Image 1: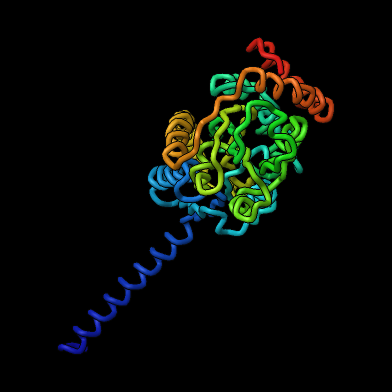
Image 2: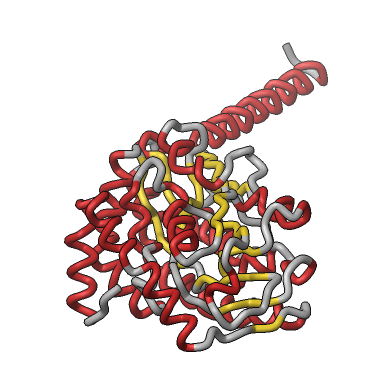
Length: 339
């Protein structure tokens, strides 16, 4: 067959073949691309969320877009903070930004750094992590996940309505706490610790269910605490970290070079993220002051009483969770610190 019709037919077949090739290539690309949802309860404005978004961006670049981490902030996937370890374990979400001390109902070992006055600053926390990081890795593994990186929260504060100069001045005041260790600590000090996930904290403040919050300056800014509270006490009583984890079944489906890229980027960014946490503490405390809150230094006698009333909780925890004793005692020996 010759003539214009044959030419048009040949052209149509060529176009069809090209379209089929493009469609096949697109389908192949879609199959090769891996999308990983990551759940976090923190809002977009929080530095931890900014960290995971940067990590996701770097992973996307390093893998040529073949691994896409999709960050879902503000608890938008429906998981509360204390549920994240289980959610990743059970494959309900492939990745999460897990607050370690909120998981102690399932894994008490993750509450090690939230023991009262065990850690004073980031240098102490780094020293502690030399001994606890291997334990955290073991905990993650038995919960069907892998830790990619760990980043601390800034030091903890008491954000309160009341201004006092003795510990008894805070007696009986209901204070929101993020975990059981913090609840036991404030109860021992004479306050009434109320265990509330972050997503319900602002409602508790608005309703008057609590008259104070134990948390970082960063969360104080996230929650616009100046709308509810007047004073910030830099007590530095506990520490905590976010563990960015991935489900092991999802991890094993990645190519070795993709796994290596994710690990390398995590290792590179983790020290930078620690520096971000330190700066965020300074910036957030200043923002709380700009909002109208007053920073109140606890008198030495008040702080000493706080430490004295809560000191026994460290030994009690280590008796209850003996697997953590070796790490804590090794840290104390290295830093010459006692509880």
